[in-house]
Image 1 (cartoon, rainbow, N blue to C red):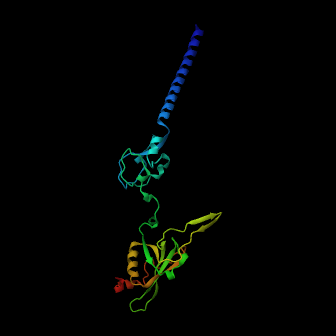
Image 2: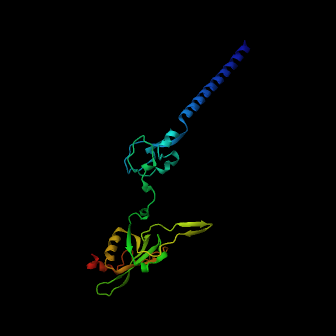
Length: 261
């Protein structure tokens, strides 16, 4: 009798194991069948809420979903899970609806860096016309530091050259804001594109109030402005003026010459 009980326990255990294996095989078969019917899947993003153009995207605004490759291939520009970091901090280019797939064209193209983003916050870019015959040529490039000189006729004094402002950062040369890019790299040697040799303007970075005063001052300059290059590592001295040269400021109180209009 005892031997029969032992065999019954063994048969029960074997039956349970076979039952579990049968269930596993069944679900594997079903999963395989569903996968074949559904095809390969990819993980993409969907919007979690309605959003308006211009809104900033945070991680809670989208979720990850699985879709079949066949569907994903039919929708242009889907953002996949691996690229979700691209979204965070971006701004919407258009209105989106909850449940819509996240697409690259939903995001503002201004995410690509533009030259105006190089302007320091609170500052302005002011273009100064200069005499091309006296431009510093290749010495000045984007990021250079310059002083501006001009001939001024102060009241009761003959015209002469003065330094108008000092240590301005160059944002563009001749209307071109890009730094020369490497044309080739051989070992540690880099060959750069040629900087501009002749140009008629330099765009500099100034405070808004200085921009207004400089425009007013330039209307009173005899002839054109000279640009003087300086070493960018050279700091201003304690006694250096930081705006318009106080020596030429009195001219701003004089009437504008009629030729300015």
